[in-house]
Every structure is written in structure tokens, then in C-alpha cells.
Image (cartoon, rainbow, N blue to C red):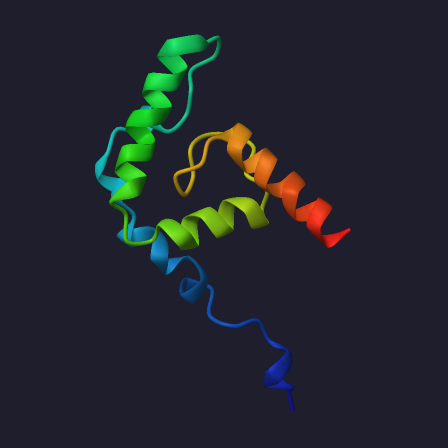
Length: 96
């Protein structure tokens, strides 16, 4: 007989929070910078994305997911790529 305790749990439970994200109603180009975007244009786009994140009911789950998987691109959970890198570095310093 199969040992069911070793089988993976329901996958939908791990990702269902994404259906509640405010970003699903927004233009996805707000969350990911186009190639070559720099300076004030990049800052304005990221701030617009972060404003959407600020009203999102799943902000914390999104943020933690992006840090856990080390999401390399875009605004996730209200954090830019640079902000996530800084948070991960701070966690490593604190742990070490």
C-alpha cells in the first residue's frame, strides 16, 4: 500500500493567493521594466507598480514568495529587484 504521508500536498493551496493579487487587474508592463529603461522613467514605473501593491490583500505572501524563490525581475510584493536583493543580503548577514 502507498504511504500517502510522503505524497506532495495539494499544489493549488500553495498558489491560490495569486488569484487575489491586485496586479491581475493591472497592466503587467508596470511590474517589469523594458530593456534599457533607466533613471526617472524606471523609478516612475516602479512607483506605479508599488502603488498597486500597497492596496493588495496578498502583499505579504507575494513578497515572501519573491524572496523565497529569489525572483530576479520585476516588482513583487511592493519591492523592486534592488530592494529584494538588499533584503536577502540583510537576512544572510543576520543569519550568519
